[in-house]
Length: 222
Length: 249
Image (cartoon, rainbow over all chains, first blue to last red; front, top):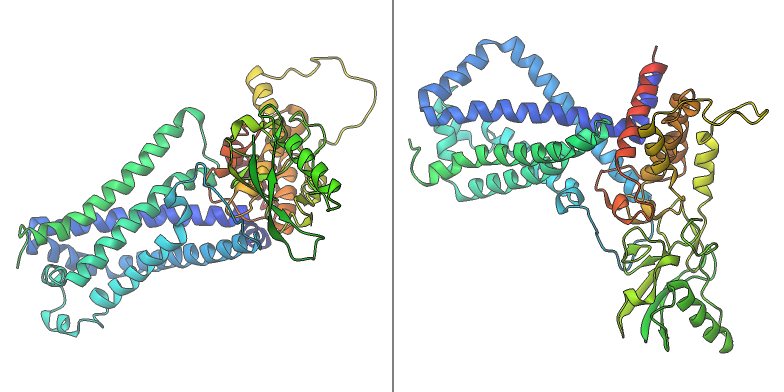
């Protein structure tokens, strides 16, 4: 137990926790997107998927607790490391150039916070239905109708698209960075890892963005 | 040529500092950056003012003493070049040049552009060594080392400990320095034995000194005058993970 706590207290160990929980969260995003894309198969397919998830309630809860744990660990570690990093430079430069670092690598906290606020809104919106009490009258599993109705609001659609674009930026740096944090570096494979990071983040974003675009163009309707 | 300098002036560690403007006139483009500062200082002394304090020693790019943030880039605009090996031909007539010290909590300013980098020495003391029993000189090549390992260890050993990596990092992280030292020792058979202990001890001391953590922005690699690769940071992470797994048994 002491070795785990000293591992986590170290900045290098804390980064590894960020990397491992990051892998888990990317996995969740892939699974979540796969489920969401059923919207293109029609209301029956999406609602059936939602019902099936509920049929395996104990497994669902295990996954939910695991997901929540990863999410909390990722955020707590990020806050801790950011505090440490800000503390490490008490006096800023009057003139500082960025030679190689990418914009996404320098704005991880910002993109992360916007994605977090989106996740919280998403839960209040569709899971707990606090912000849209009228959804409660739709019945338990009419996910399809909730989804299509939600995207008819320009505010919701805009916030969703903004969050997905920032999520893409977050993953663009995060996926490549996690390999480095876990010590997985190979001269010959570095271009492959960079391409994979860019590819996965762009593909995920395109998948998530395809749904509001399809609704906007009228390809999906009630 | 003439250039306008904006230099950080600070009387002592606890005194407040500020950027002060100086005109550097009649500079030869063949002068090194530090020779240009020497000339400016001669002018200041002649006027009865305090010269600008800056660190320097070998002036041939091998000691790691010079440490200037020039126009927002550690060691200035040229790649793989220390401040002392930078020449005025890299600047243009009338250019504004901002000169600041390394900025990090672990590198407090002593005076003007001089910082206290003894934090690096304490990191080395924590584990940057190989414990050997000294005796007779061993035969050359008594221990066979594969060529690629020797090359990689030599690349890491090129680190001169100047601290540019810390200065350039947005988190003032010392990971490139620590990883270079860990790589250069643990790639060799003599250093492998203490590999786990070394990685743990040096990372612990690095955290204790108040350096930030690595967010893999690679800003350090871009400014390193000795072109240490971030591959060594991955190696340090690997060594650290291995050490943590071993210590949990």
